[in-house]
Image (cartoon, rainbow, N blue to C red; front, side):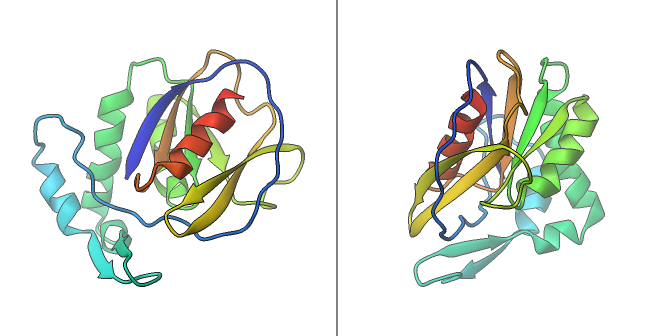
Length: 174
């Protein structure tokens, strides 16, 4: 899981989206002192070579989700990091950001903003197309989901090329 904090600002505009493939999850060290929960979280993530295509090492979080204590530890680590920091919103990137994001948002008293693939949100949206290591994709967000100056944490399952995270930050800052 990866996360990035964004201070959102100014106005909204829209753009188009092209279809494509999505990124795969990966375990990540955050540079802080090792937490004993990290080993159990790491052990619960299965690496699947060459999925969804040759050369990709897919990190499957299914086992983590099937182990409630480990899943809770993963959520708790985010909550501990962001509680009391004035975070107004947690934005979750489809789809794994939808698993962790709402739990984190509720625990820190923030709203949850879904960042979706094209044509999944009704109503007026803004969109951002981005490049992946093996294609292109797009994220969309409801217009008005954020207010200028709100502190937002972006939750995704990994950072590979940074394309998805960069697109999310652009959406949130528009």
